[in-house]
Length: 341
Image 1 (cartoon, rainbow, N blue to C red):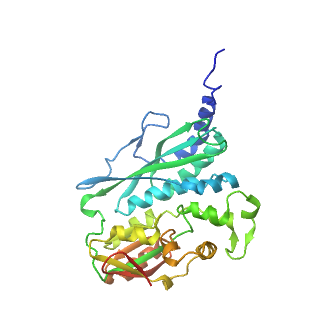
Image 2: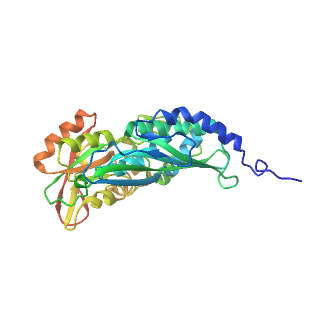
Image 3: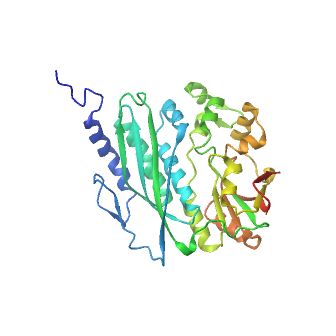
């Protein structure tokens, strides 16, 4: 008796349908630099229009992590793709790089074309927010590897920057100022702990209004990661920025020191802004210290920008002009690491 590929659990016709459903979303991200069409073996992107003395490519890759569990449970797949893009483009813009294109990797046990199309719709929206093109990706149907109805999502972005304009933190010194740009919420880090605190099996409980959160847990926990690309690129055109930290896994404690040179630490003023309710709720439920929670979550600040004292007002004015909610959250000091005050 013959056993076909379909008998083993992989139906290629589902893949064809998924491609057809996602095409309109993918093409909505195209610009004049995209060469070719969806379905080629590789994605083509021209950099001929980038007028730079010494262009340097900057790449970043990341995934959405276990935040996906909430997309599965709540059957909401149209924003999780924004998270996938955000986690990559927010990293590369920290170096002053403009994102050019993005590719995704979607893996599942059984392919449901409509669900994947919704995911790609979110990826396309994220690319538009970042000003980059979605030029390709991979869909992997792997029966027996992932539970039915679940999938994994990751991707990578490539950007470009003139070598002389690379932002790497080397000129940061004690006495510089740290500006925090507000996050949209939990973003896409720390969800293994989030799931312990809110659960990931009771849909009705997650969709019930929570007085402490001021919303349903479902709304708060699936809110997509904010994409800062356009605001940051506009800022560095107007103001000298010494360093930029994307506050992801490891929170303030791990990420801010990544931009600081040897001999320089920083002080973070915890009371310089209002911490969103979700973080207060999680700290209370978990019974953890300030240092522990600031070492896990973004605590309401998605990006930290370091500038000289004389550039603070101009930087904050420019960020507000692009719609960002900002505040001075601390300063750099002689020493090492992060001091929470």
